[in-house]
Amino acid sequence: MAAGTAAALVPIKSIMMRSRNDKFLYQGGSDEPGPACIKLLTTLKGIQQGKIKDTFGWLDYVKEARGFEKKPVTNGVDIGLNGNVDKLP
Image 1 (tube, one colour):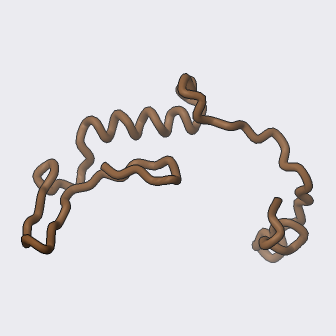
Image 2 (cartoon, helix red, strand yellow):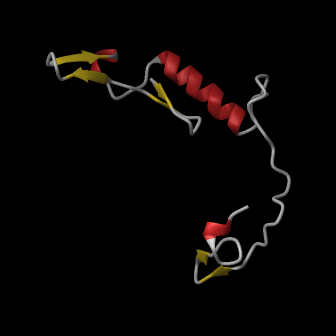
């Protein structure tokens, strides 16, 4: 599996080595994640959603954003901070 900066896990079914024309398959090339990936992903999502206690100290709770003036939604579009998303706090 692969892990990125977005705190997500993605199962990998194959890796290609083009220089040798080799292809390495995991789980027989299945689209389904393996049991280790499922367990890790379930645990990570449970911690992110507050269903499992964060014993690792991974979460930072944001109670209130400072300097953020929420504008109303206009024509179904959220216009962000003072109408300009380039000025986010």
